[in-house]
Image 1: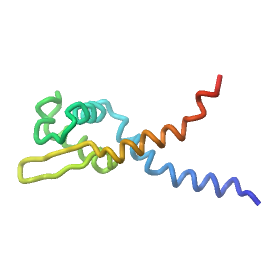
Image 2: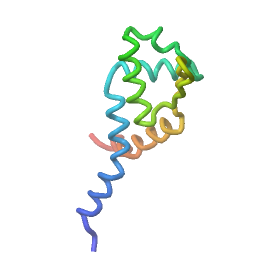
Image 3: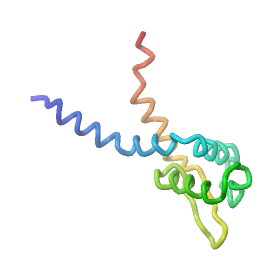
Image 4: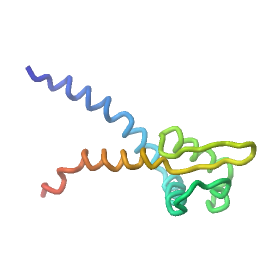
Amino acid sequence: MYDVHMEAEQNITVFDSLAIACKALSHPARLAILQTLSSRGACICGEIVEVMPLSQATVSQHLKTLKDAGLITGEVDGPRSCYCINTDAMCDLRERFGQLFGSLGNCC
């Protein structure tokens, strides 16, 4: 017998990581950081604060949120920090959004 509640519970579990990523994407400064990292096509070391109109502490907090969500990778080497887009995570995110909203082309 098909259990609707069990499927809904499984979907919620599957959506946990997607929700975490969406929450990380929900701030304009974090989107700007991702755009900056993406446009460079390479890891950025220490330059992010220079191109953002935000304080070092604010940028650091946004970077931490993105890193905790798995959307970027980063290394701290003394006073220098390097950050890169996590391309695997971003491709997975794009694919999951496609699966989630793939049937929208058939509506309305």
